[in-house]
Amino acid sequence: MQAKITTLPGDGIGPEIVSATRLVLDTVASTFDHQFTYREALLGGIAIDETGNAFPDATLEACQQADAILLGAVGGPKWDDPNAADRPERGLLAMRKALGLFANIRPVKLFRGLEAASPLKAERLANVDLLFVRELTGGIYFGQPKGKDVVDGERRGFDTMVYRESEIRRIVSLAMEIARKRPRKHVTSIDKANVLATMQVWRQVATEVGAENPDITLVHQLVDSAAMRLVTNPGDFDVIVAGNMFGDILSDEGAVLTGSLGLLPSASLGETKLGVYEPIHGSAPDIAGKGIANPLGTILSAAMLLRHSLDLDTEALAIEAAVQQALDDGLRTGDLGGGEKSLGTTAMGEAICARIKKH
Ligand code: NAD
Ligand code: IPM
Ligand code: MN
Image 1 (cartoon, helix red, strand yellow):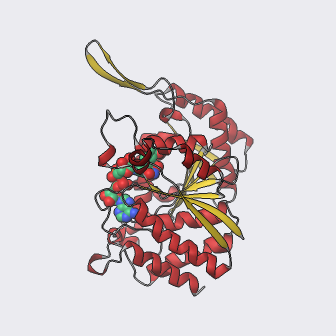
Image 2: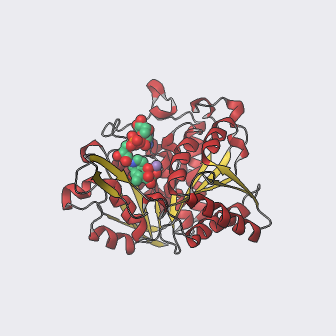
Image 3: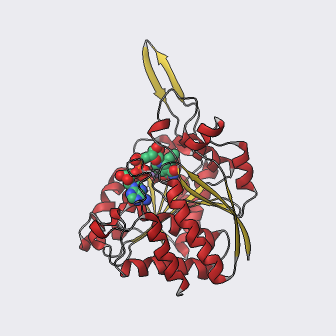
């Protein structure tokens, strides 16, 4: 098949992990006889530097004309001035909103052989196979009013957490659909209904959606105790649905159960087939430019891209199998405890390519 892929390398380790992933996509194309054409566009800090805008119109256009979008990461200390006119992260949020990507899917799967890399004891990791469905275009990230001002001579900052019924219904319904295809058919809805009015509406609507899906078990859990249970009994969870901010926080916690934040892929999806595929981690300024970042979260995001936007399930499985084989062969990046024998970003990408070719 022919497909147009727009890449948004972004900042920090973004360009490094995206180029390692391009190698993998090229190998998939040659092995399975597809033609992928790429267009690179600016997002984040690099876009601010080059155009003064973290999400330029040309990038929106490059995203809209693509079949799928592969993103590295944005942000870094260079653009962290709280008084700056624009921020890299604003560009990312604006892109999600402009493309209508209301759902962020973050599957947390353990890879065989990485038990020692996890901060949890192996016995706690039994049965871990969970998936976050994070609402991505609403909640406190986008609610108005939002801003900074001075009141009674002191600085003040404020944000608004707001969810409409339709937004809650849409994301919880998607979580139900996803759970239906999984063996446990279980959804945990995360809220803070004991304190926040927004979250009381969230729980009410989630309960209604649950009643419409009687084949799925729905349970509600407060976000604070959910954070605790993710490290004490992570194997209890199947699908976890959460609003934008709680989903952001819990999914970093969930990711590291597998051994490293650098492993977790994600898909940001809307009503159409167009999606943005990105690792859940950030631009890792502390290791940027060293060629040591783990590219596997991005490579696994490319597998999600093939599966969801291009319907190439066999090819997606080939990438996932190649990642497991590379780990079985003892290959590790530094964050996975590779120690002195650690592979760099490009070498790990090439190792995945070699295993796809043997497919
Ligand atoms: P981070 O995810 O960038 O890094 C957290 C820690 O994990 C760091 O020690 C980092 O070295 C490590 N790490 C992350 N990805 C790794 C990888 N692939 N391989 C090896 N190690 C990896 O989070 P942070 O430091 O809090 O944020 C840095 C910047 O990234 C901030 O500007 C933040 O806004 C931005 N950010 C962007 C995205 C995104 O673009 N989607 C996501 C999260 C954070
Ligand atoms: C993520 C990131 C972003 C978010 C930031 C960089 C805006 O943390 O994709 O998880 O909070 O959504
Ligand atoms: Mn995050």
